[in-house]
Image (cartoon, rainbow, N blue to C red; front, side, top):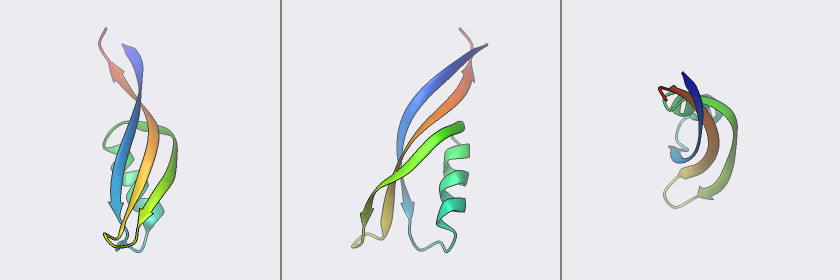
Length: 60
């Protein structure tokens, strides 16, 4: 098994009262988050753009 690192960008709706929980749940679907940051908020679309580094296990 090999540990792979990925840089991902996701958009999260702001309508959810628990923004941090929504971000962590969305990132957990894609791997184990190492770090993440909200890099942009679109007030018109009511979304937050999150950039993150996640790790996954893969076969060589």
